[in-house]
Length: 122
Length: 107
Image 1: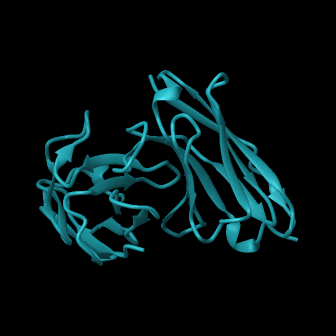
Image 2: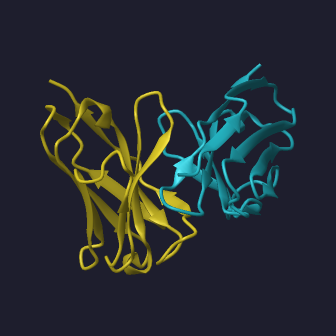
């Protein structure tokens, strides 16, 4: 069955960097766009970034543009989120999410990982 | 950006009740609307996509309707496992945006 396992979450100081990883299994990874979605403690869902199936296109939320980079290695069935210049407001659970399609739109989040927690605090 | 407005933000209901949650988009999104369920400490789960199509494995007591800017999620007969938070999401364009959520609580 489909499995998405995130890792890399940690406590980091403001201005610091972190790289999240998401290992995928149970499906043909290269056939799907992948997203990161985050959720601050006690808050709603916020979409962060998308990377198309072949890495040809990336898009970001304005709140992370220029600071975060999404990438993937289809040979390792893994998607990454490099986070730089971290701020307190980036504190959240970060979910790796599979898109139903290779090249959306539409954007359907059909499988979610369990998340990895990023805390930005001094 | 397309703004998604859900109402109510919370509701209290009993097992067996019919529950309706609404979601309004700030512009026409045709039927590009999805619904998710999230339980405490868990990742969200896709319930309905394209406004009215049930994701595989989702019980038939869940239903979705609407198009354009106004959408509805209905739970026909609330079950104990349905107490959770529900989010709508527009799948039409980037940035993908979610509604603020509706928490369904025990009355």
